[in-house]
Length: 264
Image (cartoon, rainbow, N blue to C red; front, side):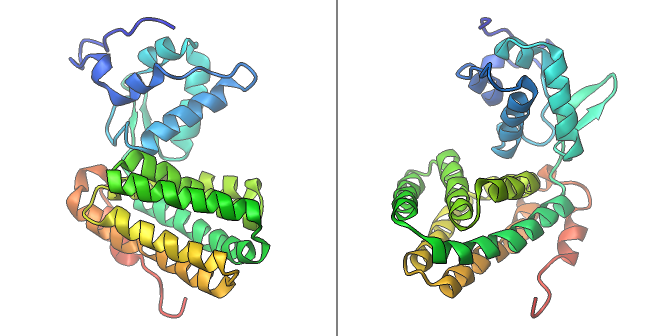
């Protein structure tokens, strides 16, 4: 692995101070898996977890150097990210992280609403000892991360909580579909965790879902999941007001139009 080098002179920021580039030092690509898929996942995670915030430049030369790869798989990964509106590619100017597109986030929310509401009901009827233990361990870890205000860890545990429910109620394939649709939404979720009492609220909502599942009560688990999913609309409006620079120019207008119709 090459020694850390400075970013291009125009940034004036040492690469070691960049949280995303710094995180690459601990990574090793798996030779049994295609490089493009791995690089796509690494950059996507960096964007979703806000290590690469909106407007940040994608330093292709440093990424290639840190991971020991050529430009070809990186560029293929960037094309996939551009198709998801996660990066903006400007010929001759470079690639940067795109702002959060609210319409894409709400589209991802529709996928979650359709699929997660179904799988949580199925999970309540299919719950077994292995999933009980896995969910209980996850909830304990969530409580610990929330108390420590470790929001990176809390976000990952939040993801794992929903993955476990999807895999119990359906299959890993269903979770991959959900996960693939919600990148913009995930940036909003991660951005919200440091807000006052936000992580505690999410934890309480997860606890309500967990309690319904442990009781094998599909309607109770589904009602708790619906409350949890619906709260994203409030979170979006608050974050647009607080972090306007993170969102696309039409964010306020789109958010104002959005919402759950009565009786939906």
